[in-house]
Image (cartoon, rainbow, N blue to C red):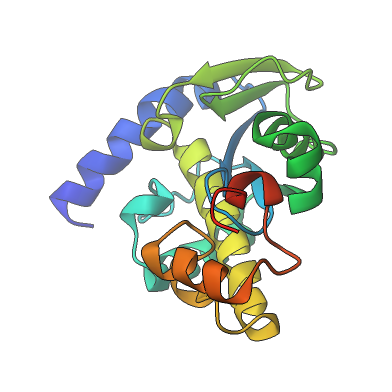
Length: 204
């Protein structure tokens, strides 16, 4: 492990290390897909053991797609619990993105045997345990960072499938975010079934 990676891991462990030492069963939670024009919002709930530590666990946005896929597999093999929850474009349109995201978090944590949930920014979700919201949690907690990778890879894979189902929008490239390419495709093709109508009404 390089010195830079070791330092990064130590930063992430400043949150998780004391909790492991206290013997608390805790989960990290994060989401992917609040901002895109299309696709589900996906939340993940992950309980990680103190050993073995996975070298490349980090904020998912800081990892290349290939690295994220590799670390995703390592997390799935190592984690004590992984839960994934989703909210559809229809649900997002019906109740707004914030409330839909909260529902996705609740679904992800539904069967988690955790006494404490570390959440990236959000809190007061009514989970069956204590909740601790941490601003920029995916940069400050090993468990939240692991959850960010599970959520991101899960959603990206969904968008790759969406690209095959609905060609022409460029979902494989922009993953549903409002890039110029995506906006141009929307204007030319109109919305497809996975578009969030409340997000795109200015463009169609």
